[in-house]
Length: 424
Image 1 (cartoon, rainbow, N blue to C red):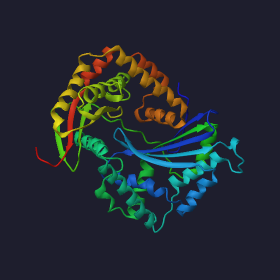
Image 2: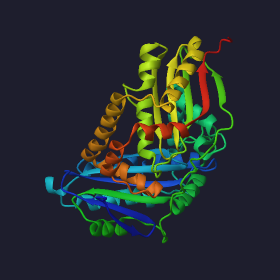
Image 3: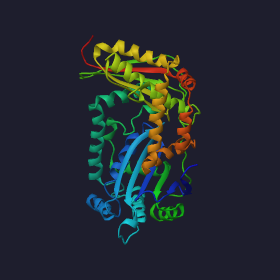
Image 4: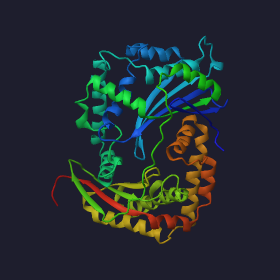
């Protein structure tokens, strides 16, 4: 049973958890659109510009002082992707009125602040303020350049880009460097209006409140056009692999980055999802995993070796850092670990340790309002209602045979290797 009460208000889905467990109100607003080459970069830029000022607080310093007036309320945002969707998440954290002497109800003031940010931004000459757009284009450009400079992140992104070359998932949620320069204030405002009109909007509030109160406050704070909430489109996780892609890229690097992309064919809403979590944990999700022990510890072939599961896209990725000369041997041993799981070479210790790690993580969700929000948002994205307790019980029930069934569905899709410029 979900602890969230649900409601709808114009184009916003409301999710409220009334609780006295926390001394603060945790507020998250998710705005999601399908990943698209034409919109991914301007949509990524929009929240950077929105944080600079609103119609009520046009100067950035006044915008920040407003947060100080709310007893140092926290405000921030992220831009990321889930499945084939680009999601902008705004977060606010404000103390409960019971613990301070405030003339203004702080939840009401916080939702008004967020409503202004999202729906009443500063507009000049039919566009966003020029100097804010110019400054935030520089910020976004630096964020993307930082990925190129971080070769571990760069290799992980490039592997996915090659693996999903014909899918929206190839796009980075922060957009493309070569598109930033051409974005003008008026054009960005047009993108903003389309984004606000078409995005799937979900507002979460956790704290000492009620769905009725939040509904009333949101009605007063958000200036949205009438309509119904937009749905999320589930990505197709079934991509049969006809031939493994082998990609070698050369840059000025001192250590090779070997990444592999695997298709699981299993999404978050699949009954086999708990077993896929176990599969990833045993493969490379934890320090006791096969990749860590066999590739890094026993063979000393890698500086790091791990795997990561994206259950929304049905993709599992392997990341490792190796010496250039160890490429063939490292690939062979990683493939041996994939085959080992498929053959059912799973010890009771591997099973129990992995279940313990996943279970601890699921239990720890209850200690953070934002973690509970993030977990519940999975149900919005996929249409699959599965509480953390239910998932915990399902993971505990996973058998070795269940993991083998997952392994039999897994297909190696792409091998990506980032190495030095010297020819072999």
